Image (cartoon, rainbow, N blue to C red; front, side, top):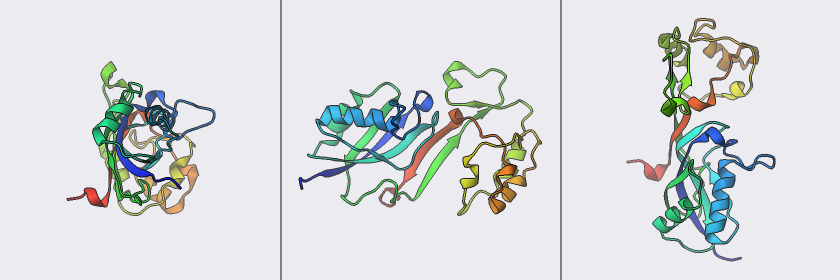
Length: 212
């Protein structure tokens, strides 16, 4: 078996024009597929890229972490710059370095930080439109804050994986206490519509060796 070297990289992308992270047989423009294609062109070999987690269609990332194995060692800056020269404008490798052979981006992740951007403005400027989700001017942040107080801790969020009946906590159409009931019962009949993907960004993934 030939020797390989594991690398870790931080990737940023605008998710608007990608069909999510995961490579798909029926959608060639996914972040994984684009990055793997650039890696293949740079290194001359097949490269499988693993991510800390999948992002859905339209979701952005400032700090997605990936790992992959190469057949020879690469200087970190040469690897970063070489891949970036072959990537489209909406995805970039911010940093790359060799990692321990046993490092795994998904299993070793301690926590992830996400940011969701809403705007109650009557008009959202074009420079913000891809990254900010519009919300009605009468939406009440205080109601949203009450609804999410239950979220910290170890939770099963699988109930939110489907689209079901319409309601809206921010406008007072669904009580803030419904969040607690959803997590306690898993009753999908209580769900409201999902927020638009464009407002969501994966900001950071933390690992033990990164912490002070």
